[in-house]
Length: 110
Image (cartoon, rainbow, N blue to C red):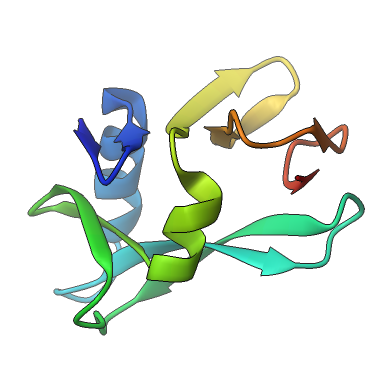
């Protein structure tokens, strides 16, 4: 599923649906980019009930993912995935704009 030049895998959509099924009706997952982290920028995931008019909305009715316009710029061309491997289970963002990232993959630099 691709929109706004950001792709979300079916694994990620399914995990978002599972997470949001435990939240009150109307909950959505917000993915954003903030300054900080060990590499300069970091990804942030929050459950929210409000959507801004200029948010990019990805996913489907039971698994809506919101991305604000500033974060969309940092995430252009990225893929949001969910991985469950020996290291652990987590959302993973494969960002072609990142020049480097930390070991855990939650922060990056441009």
